[in-house]
Length: 291
Image (cartoon, rainbow, N blue to C red; front, side, top):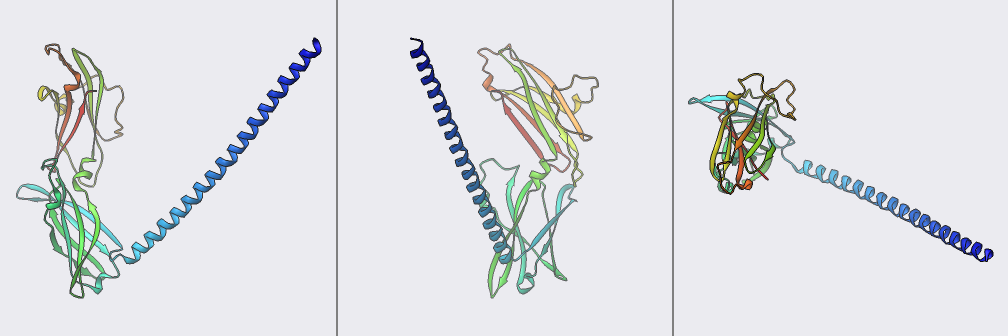
């Protein structure tokens, strides 16, 4: 009887050892497969990088303009602030062509409706001047838009074009201001939240002229807050987590909105909106729905 039990134990031990051996071999095989797969991925990545470099080289060889630089200055015209754009182009090929022009048109305008079709925007142009192998052009446009640019040149009586980097005036102006909305609590009677704004340094000396926070229920404003005025009060409770602003300008509000007078309150109908206006005439908005 004891011998049979010992034999059974030996069989179990043998089965366990065999199972462990099989698992180890399987793990070893999977590890080898993973290493081979990782090697294949690395080789594909290297091949992709080589192809990408070759493609960039071909594009650069066929490009008319080798480099472009944009400088932006504020300019007041008829009591309105505009952007004077100075474009410098580097090229060893433009000297071979005639009738050089810089073309630009609007690709975004914050004053237009969201569904506005910019493909119908007209192209405007300005002359490109050659100064000892450096090519210059300038034009004046509003800060309220983003623009696409291209250069036009005549070659054997044919007009050709080459695309230049976009000029995202409005988008870059908006990036000067970081905006944040943090919701602490919302229930059938009360909404608690904070709004934070941080201003970063930029090449254009921009100031924040106004900052408003509007709380909507459905399409009706239930509360409007002047953020700049609220920040004139000292000793206020600060947000739980603050935007990174270092030594930059910083504004915040912590607010509560009472909805107890609304029957059948639906929090999905609550919207918080930030509206900023700066000293170059732009308006920036941020909207957050309450989940």
